[in-house]
Image (cartoon, rainbow, N blue to C red; front, side, top):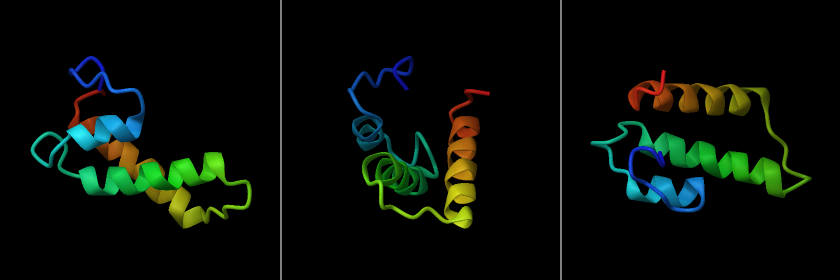
Length: 69
């Protein structure tokens, strides 16, 4: 995202600059980012296997949409 001109500090700040035109699944990416932040910051957060799969698939789809790979 930095190479695309989004130099904000955190991923959340970068995501706030994107629109559905730039990234069609932006709402799902924002939700995945919230879950990722919960995992990192809350030692009691319980991540289900389904949530983990969903987060990975969401990020994968976003990377394809952004033509990263």
